[in-house]
Amino acid sequence: MRLADELRLPRPLHPGAWWVWALGLATLATRTHNPLLLLLVLVVAGHVVSARRTTAPWARSFVVFLKLGLVVLAVRFVAQVIFGEATGATVLFTLPEARLPAWVAGITVGGVVTLESTAAAFAEGLRLATLLACIGAANALANPRRLLACLPAALYEVGVAVVVALSFAPSLVASVQRIRAARRLRGRPDRGVSSLVSVAMPVIEDALERSLSLAAAMDSRGYGRRADVPASVRRTTAGLVLTGLLGIVIGLYGILDAGGVVALAGPVLAVGVLTAAAGLVLGGRRAVRTRYRPDTWGLPELLTVARGVAAAAGAIISGITEPAAMHPITDPLVVPTLPLAAAVGAVLATAPAWCTPPPVTVLRDHRRGTGRRRRTTTHTDTTPVGVGR
Image (cartoon, rainbow, N blue to C red; front, top):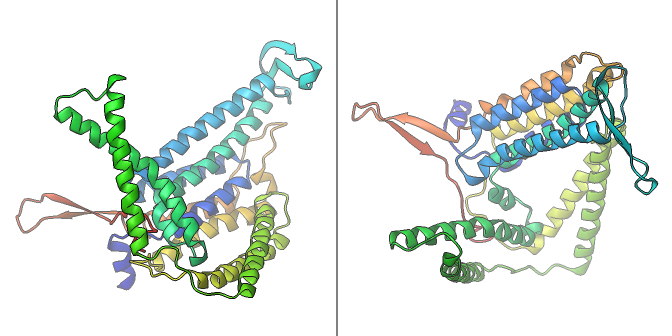
């Protein structure tokens, strides 16, 4: 009954869970050149985003990243056709050929374009586009401000600075729209060069008022207050964090690299995460603050994280058991097949579309007997995390 209540009642999922899920899909995408598997990852990410995104401004980022991925795919394909070296025997067409001077490495422009070389370029471009789509899915599903609110106490000041920077552009756009609407109501022009000066001054005044209000709010909440910590503890904290971050970088490189030794990279990553976590916990003693309405971590978050880990684990297993399916050869060109473990992991990653609380609930008003639909949305926090937390 408790599980049913957690899945039925609308609430925002912890942003960290969405990022772990998206990074699991991204890990799968980075370890394969199989176009069928990459397309499956795109479908999974798009399905989950369409089922669980809200109406917040950042929810549109998935479409933006998809368009960016299409641009990357097109650029990679055109670069292969114009500058790439032809491989294979299946000639598609021939372009006029010109060899550039030696000071540009003697690159040949144009020439023979083969099916094998364009297929390899398409697979590489599709992999990068899929990776961008996974990052876009995380941005569309996770509230960036609430994600920064979940930062450890040691990174509190950094998080506040990032939130203030992120909120500047949306606040400026909202201010411009509000002032232009007010000018239209007064019958004054709001477009063209002549209206720029009259709109710019109220926008600057509004920005100054917001800055003063933010400064007063941060001062009243004791921003910048720190506890007394010995110098030895500060040095130990810095050493642990730096060592942990170095281990995380080395471990991630070994896992994401298809030719890396996973058996060695996994323990290095685990040790790096534990060391960095210990440093952040120790450094959190310097920040004295309280949290207002912290994000909960329940069973839906655990299920979402588990599905992302399953996608990454499936890619690693298939890379060991089915390397030919994960990286199909293009010369000679062969029809790709889906690796079993990676495909199962990708399919399991669709679970957050139904095993997480819905962002929007549609209810019927039975008291009036009209069957009219009423929409109840989840809470969307629009205040900077450094203020009021």
